[in-house]
Image (cartoon, rainbow, N blue to C red; front, side):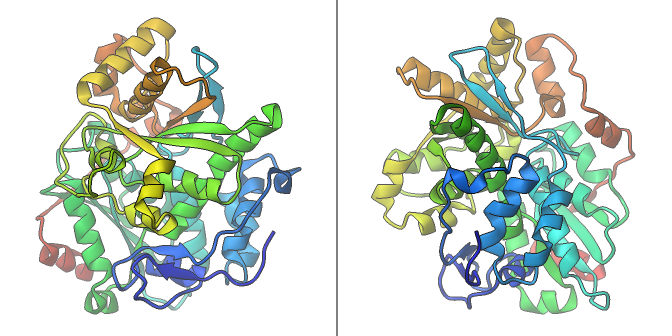
Length: 436
C-alpha cells in the first residue's frame, strides 16, 4: 500500500516538515528534535500475503513511508541490498518461549539491519559533485561497527565513530577501529551520553555543517529506525500465520531505538501483542514506567555496555506517539536487571538448557523469567541483539567453555585496528571534523 506523500516533523514541533530523503539527510531536526512521520499507515496481516522474506516484507511495509519521495522507486533495490541475512525466530527450551536472533549480519549485532539500509539509501541520494559527507555516530558498542561496515569504502562518504574509551568490550573496540580508509574511530574521554551529546551538538551547528557536511547514523536517524520495524513484522507475521495469535516481545534497550521500532510496527497494525522493555542498571526508563518523572541521569558502566545510556534519545519519539503519559505507562512496562542478575542468567541458562546469551539478551531473558514466575502464560519472544562471542571476556568464564566467533566477526577481528583519542570537548571534535 502507498498513498499521498509522507511528511516528517520534529518531535519538538518548531522545525519545518520535510520529505523522507531530506529528513534522512538532516539526521537531527534543527530545533534539536527527532523526525517522526506526520501519520502512520495502517496494515492488516493479509496485506503481506505472498511476502515472506525480509526484503519483500520491507518493501511493502516501508512503501507508505517512502511515498512520493525521491527514493520511492529505489525502495525495492534498497531493501534487497540491506536485508541479505536472516532474523530467525528460534524455539527456546522453556514453555514454548522463542528468541528472535538479530545477530547474523556482518558485525554480529542487530544494528547491521538499519546501518546497511541507511547506507543504501544515502548512497542513492548523493550527487557526484557534492562535497564528501561525514557520517558522525556515537556508539555504546555495536552501532559504530555496523555503521563502519555499511559505509566502508563508499565513495563520497566519511565516517567518524565516537565511543567511550574503556567502556566497550575489547572485541567491540577492535571492530570500531578495524575498518580504516574512510572510517575513523575516536575514543572519547567520557561516557556514551557524552559521545551522544557531542554528536547532537555537531549536527545542529550550522557553521560547522557549512564547512564539513554531516549526516547521522544513530537511532535518531529515520534511515536506521524505519528498517528496524521489518524484523518485528516478519516474526509477528510468521507467528500469526501459524497460530492466528499475537506475538509478545521482551526487548533489551538502551537508547530506545529498537523498542520504538517494534512499537511503531504494532501501531501500524502488525500482529504484535505486549511489548516489555529490559534495561541494565541504567534505570531511567523503568523508573518512568513505574510512575516516576522522566529524569535523565549520568550513565553507569555495566556488563551490558551497549545499553549504558542515561538519556535515551528515542524517548522523544515515544512521547510523540503517546503524548498522554498516563496512557504511555499503561501500554508498556520496563524492568531493570543488574550485573549480578545478568551473570546469573548467563550461567544458569547454559547449565540448565545449553543456551548461550550475550549480556544484553540476558537482561531480556531475565525479564521473561520474571513474567513466567508471576504466572504469565502469553507467547513471548526475547530479542537477541548481539552474538555472545562479541563479549567472550564476560560470557566464557560464566559458561566454562570457549565461544566460536561467526565467520564475519572473525574476519573483522583479524584486521589491524586503531582509534584516535578525543577530548570530551566539542571544540576538539569540531577540529577533527573540519580537518577531515
